[in-house]
Length: 282
Length: 305
Ligand SMILES: Nc1ncnc2c1ncn2[C@@H]1O[C@H](COP(=O)(O)OP(=O)(O)O)[C@@H](O)[C@H]1O
Ligand SMILES: [Mg+2]
Image (cartoon, rainbow over all chains, first blue to last red; front, side, top):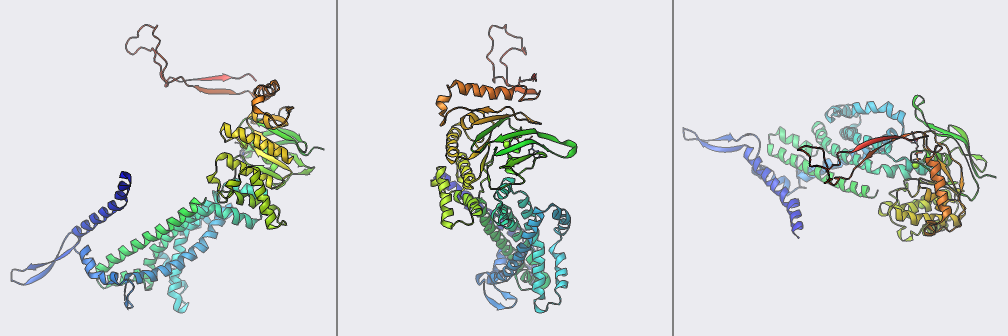
């Protein structure tokens, strides 16, 4: 009983305390606008605070609540509920992520299976892997410039896929190399065909590693989307953030940052649950 | 006509400049229906020897034939029970066995295959665990699944690589009896690898010691002429059992079984030796008891070869 209460205290209350403390700290450092009476008797608005242009939590809520209380509203093209923007982003992330997995998994298998393939392409992968999405994006735009109306979308998908697939590639390759020789010996003794060995033994044995890769890839795909939308102007949460910045509405930036973080966190949680399911199956 | 023949088989591992010879000129024949045990030190090359029969390894020189046919690769006519169970962890007991059965008997009807699987699960007394995964089984149960899978392949010869090595003594005793019974009933030819002379005597018709490596060789075959079923309690007092065991052990420990080696071992004293009160009281800092474990000694004994 005592222990249970302790666990609840730890699991629920402590994070809440952390949130409250963070909000307080945020409020403390953020800027305020105060009315000041000038010597000549007129009132003037003066900014004060440690970081004068950082909107505080209260101000953020006041200015952005319309995006939050009606999260799916669509008033105008650039004035929609925050979750509606998020949804647009999620759709494009899902597509790019799917491409990343479809390319990355087989590539990882090839790397893991063939020493020569690995020797040939591992250096190239190591070079391409650290390239920022901001660097890939213009290339995507150029490549798909002639694709008419879907050019923007294709460029975005290209960027997401090419940035997000590396963890999948590398983890799958590691997983394939880590398949215990005993499992492969079973396949040899039973004379399983190549396809059967792949589907009955190699893929199930690699699955936990693959899922680790998938999880990391999803995190990257979500990171990339904001950059992609800023550059292509596709409607979505990153694009919203960029527009509001250009309009000088800094409270919306804060809202977007919090939303992006929260969605990323939820995606990661969901993947980790899936991952655990597959790991416990093994 | 001999069934399984190894003639002058040698095997080395490693790159040419640093090759270690594991097996040197090993010859062995096994008759059909015979149960042969190979007893040897760990690391001597027992698994290597077995793998050349299973076809997972090829000898550097010499030949391995089964039914007069050269063994060139692994195949389902040789059912292997691997040293570390080697069950696929994402499959249940039944699925693990079905993987083999479905692969090897594609012409059978689905119901006949399922029946074949269940029959072999029942044979090792695991019907209650047929839908469990290996992680939910004890070591002994896993090894029984492994035996069931090998037998379900209906192999010509069963190859058991230290099947009970990782089990506790009591489970091992039960499984020794169980596997002996199953092998006897199936009438299969069996090659058992073990590091336990008693296990060999309890289970096999013939025991062949393998000397310590590198360059291990097989010793003289020792026939076990004890009636079956063998009762381990009665055997403990059987003079023939004792004589068999001493033959095996003395060959393994003797000049043939072990090349000249020096054994270096740590001698660990009990944590504190009682103080010897007869001794005169020492001065402060004197070297009298109690002695502590930190005062370990190391000694090296050159064994005669
Ligand atoms: N694939 C391999 N490559 C290199 N050395 C090996 C390989 N397999 C076994 N060895 C070596 O051969 C010796 C015998 O191994 P093994 O047959 O597994 O012994 P045992 O089964 O009797 O314990 C060991 O010293 C081991 O290090
Ligand atoms: Mg071994």
